[in-house]
Image (cartoon, rainbow, N blue to C red; front, side, top):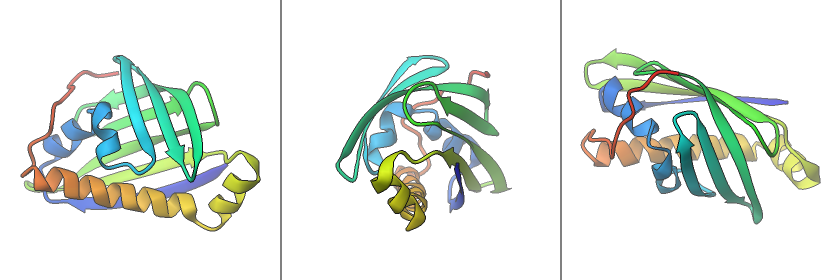
Length: 149
């Protein structure tokens, strides 16, 4: 099991960063290799990805969600993976988004890519693109979900 921890500071309030992260259907706009995320219900999503030519579909379950604080999930199908994203107020207009991810690479190509730091660099790029996405929207999220799990 590989563990990755990355963070990014964004120039938006905690509420804006959190609200945008709840909009799973928008993930393809800033996550490389994510082609589609369907929100099935409040706690279940279906993902379609294509990373380095490997196409995958899997289901994930949100196991904990506290507005403006954290969202935790785990895969229900496909490769074993899960994680948590937390939101930390730096000041009224800046937030640190911290992503902790655990995944179990499958097959030779994924294991080699993991050892070479491919996944860690992908996460770094995704967080940087999230920052650009929300900041270019002047901190206005595309939507929000304020429920608690």
